[in-house]
Image (cartoon, rainbow, N blue to C red; front, side, top):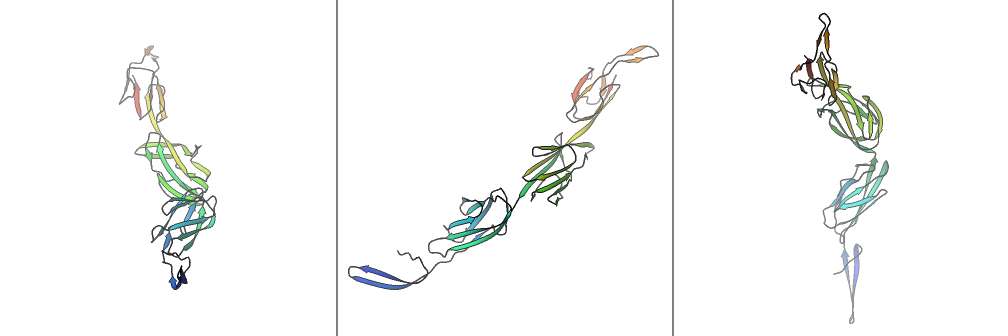
Length: 273
C-alpha cells in the first residue's frame, strides 16, 4: 500500500531496473466529526472535572492542551483540575490516518464551587425538617433540611430556629457543626471555601414531674436524672413520714427504691408515697 502525507494532486513514480513510470493521482482526506460535552461548562477549582470527547469514527487519537493539568481517564474520557478561578481555553486535537485532522478550542470558566449538605436532627435520633435562613456569597438557599446544594464559595450566614416543636415534642438547638467547627448560637457567620457538611443538633427537652421529691425539672434526652424522697414531719402530731414507694405510669426505675437514678428518654410523672 502507499501512504500520502498531503492532500491534492500528487505524482507517483515507480522505479525498476528496466526503467521508470510516473502516474498522477488525486489524494484526499476522509472527514470525521468530533464533539465534546465540556464547552461552556463551569469547572470546579481544585477538583477533577470530567469531560468526554466523541467522534463518529473509531480509534481516533486525541491530544488535549490546557494551562491546567489534564489526565486521560478512559477511552475519550478526560479530567481537568483547575487551580484557580479564571476564564481559560482547552484545545482538543483529533487525528487518524486517512482523515482530516481536527482541532477545537473550548472556552471554559473555573470557579471555586462547593457542595453543601445540611441536616437537622434531635439528640434522640429524630430527623427534623427545618427551614433555615441561609446565604452563601449573597446567594440565598431556600430549602428545608435535609438538602444538598452547589454554590460558589464565599461569606456565609446561617440562622436556625432556636426551638422546634414536632408532634408535641420540644426541641432546643444545642450545636451547629460545620466541619471541625462548632457553634452554639443559632446565628452563624463564617466563610465556606470547601465542601461542607452542616449538622444542626437539637436537644429533646423532657419533663420529670416529681411530687414530694427532690430532683424534678426539665432534662435533655439522654441526661441522668436523680430523684430522692426526703422524710417529712407532720408538726401537729410530731409524726415522721418516711418513703414507702413511688407511684406513676411506666416508671423507668424500681418503684420500691428511694434515691433512684435513670436516663431520661421520655416525660416522667412520679409521686413519692
